[in-house]
Amino acid sequence: MSTSKSQFRTPLSRARGLGASHHGVGHFISERVSGLALVPLFIWGAFAGIRLAGSDFDTVAAWVAIPINAVLLSLLFIALLVHLKNAIQVVIEDYVEAFAPKAALVIGNLFVCMLAGAAGIVSILKIAFTGAL
Amino acid sequence: MTETSRGLPERPLSPHLQVWRWHITMACSILHRASLFALYVGVLLLAGWALALASGPDHYACYTDVLGSPLGKLVLFGITVAVFYNVAYIVRQSFWDLGKGFDPKTANLTGVVVIAFAVAAAVVTWIIALATGAI
Image (cartoon, rainbow over the protein chains, first blue to last red):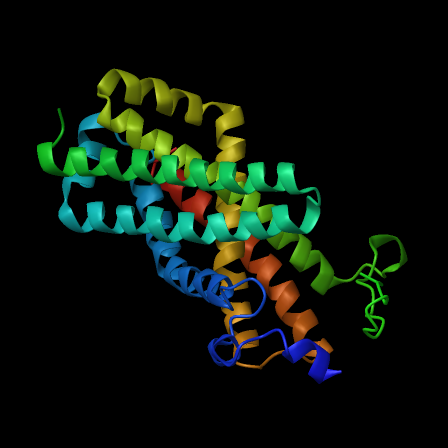
């Protein structure tokens, strides 16, 4: 059994061990590591949410302009979007079989995540660098 | 995936929902996927919040009015539950990655704990927010 299959794999390919999809367990690991980063960020985010929910514009803008808050908010965007991009992609790949709709949804998911991340981080940096208007 | 034409051994089928007994670990898994979609809505709302804040007081007031409406609060509460569900679920998964917690008794128990933590932490968060006058 192994003779007919292994003939088509070069020794280099076997040594890399990345399998048929060419990226090995990178997807799985990035999901787990982004998940670990999200645990403290989520807990910080809950406290931030409680603090900011009833505040007016000036208070919130001043809070975002504090460097540590701007940094943690940006990291929350990055970790959350890496996590969600991977997670939602797996759901799409699980349930959508046909190639074209699957590819469209996977690419659309990536674009939405990139757009949300760019919008969120640029907005935060703008407030961080220029302060409240 | 039962193709055997290439001489591969027949693989076991994934359990179908119709013939699979409903139990807590399965509910946790399904809830985890559902919570990811809630987080997806959440991160889009968070990006919108940042955009509104960067667009000035008028846009920000408009945005927070929408989020502060009864429907907005309901959505935000759901997202709070999803956030805490993920916090607990990630911890549970990390123990799985270490090879721990797979025996049925432990897996059932941690499943109940994850769901209970999510609901309790979300309720406590909103009670604190109410008590401090944030809402």
